[in-house]
Image (cartoon, rainbow, N blue to C red; front, side, top):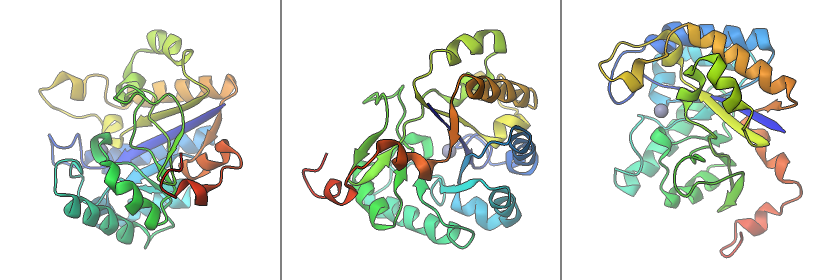
Length: 247
Ligand SMILES: [Zn+2]
């Protein structure tokens, strides 16, 4: 059983806010917790954030975590012309690869137009984490599309904000390959009129995350980073998959 722990490093609650408390206050606390738990995670960083906060990116890498791309400007890739979306993806990779290799991608709002899969493939990105098991087409596990392994988010990040007495039974139902995600701004806490944005955010989330990860590990889940996902699929011929008609 595998656990992909992931974090999208972006401005606070995009597109509703423009502050960066999560990066300044939330991210260091999250990294400290992962050190304590001895768990490696995948951090999908927004390119523009990396340019503004290079030290934050080095902190992620130096602690042994995987660097992934969360686009350059956190634009909805399905709502801009395809050419613009493609440029955003490529630009993010150029920026982030100055820090470390990048093998994984997660689109803002988990919205990746299919036409961008060949772009990811061409850019040497082997894993896409933009699908979610709770959104159409409701993928249940790993899939391969256009030569890219797709690792769906299993539940929304707000599940980790649920009080532990209720959260634990939910975690007991997780599939054999589970992806959880959290945002640094959820850890720092945000002030906003929309309850779905702020409820359950703040440093108490760290305690819940500690419980959740420890519980999953005790149940036999092995923490992995996104670039390790293809190893779960065994001896698939990726060259063949990249051909039209490949599964
Ligand atoms: Zn995002």
